[in-house]
Image 1 (spheres, rainbow, N blue to C red):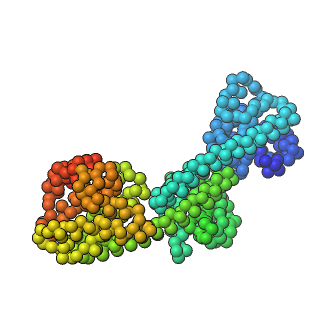
Image 2 (cartoon, helix red, strand yellow):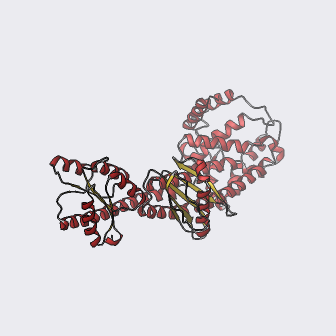
Image 3 (cartoon, rainbow, N blue to C red):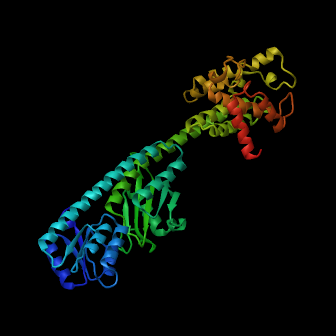
Length: 481
């Protein structure tokens, strides 16, 4: 830290002391503020950037020790040198315990003060560098979390929470840029009321950041601002806003504030949040692209499912219901999000093979003949063949192929049993059976839920995986259905 950019605050009720110290330190190249009481010192600390405080202990009003406590509470990195003309060991120990950097006695040896000031400034630099390093380590962990999150609402919330925590802000807002270039609030967090985020000064600042693709910092009391910007509301001490940029576009704006009774944001805060915003921008854009792909994927799957159900008037909505049951079951069983998504889509597509089965068989009111039932039993293999050549459906093939296997063996199409049956297919088997039993079919009316439950219990360990039956019944009991 160059001395010409180092600001020292001297606090002493003796004007002569302030003058002597001030002149000496100015000659050494420091920028110096002098005040005669702690109350004035707090005003300077609120309005100015201060790198070191030299304060007398015994002063009228707020004492030097009380001032030390306040400084360490608000900004622990500012070193404080305590001075006194009445030194005692107890006073020195108390000051050092409270965080004072060092202790000086009057009358001063100016060279000694110069050396202690130099060491205190170096200590502050090292502390800030250590703080920066620790925050960068934390930032690395944060970015790993953000890049592994695929839900946009969850990502927005995590990013905003991390930003507030790492900058020690009192509140934050995440504004997303839509396809037409309009900003809308996606998420707010912290102690700031949501209505304040639509204040004209803050919305103007966010639009300014969006249009110029650069951050803005606005402090309270500053009236000379770039064109189009307004002074921030009196509730706030400091406001920062960052563009969330990717190589191709701006995805949004991050805004953070500190209340009027706080210190303004530091350069360290700005550096950390700027890095975090850069990383999060890419994550936000990637997740939005992923969601667009996933939504199109889901539309394609639903179109397939509807094509099947159009052939069978009795199965309208069957695939959607099976999908809902599989998702609830998969979550209850603790499957990770990616596997839940696969089971969900398999639920929609499990009967896709019926598109190759005659409508006369599908809609037959009476009992199927053996030959007709053999035709029906072909639908898992037909479905697996249909989706096997579609790249984004290929991973669903094992579940679609095996959802009619029996846990004890003897199901179709391959007759495998137990854990040979893919876990997702075992979930589908229970969901599909329950939905079919509680729906009307051409050959019978729907069964009551109680009857369906009793059949599931009876077939536990036979047709169905006992653990999945237990989970299904556990869900039913917990929801009271």
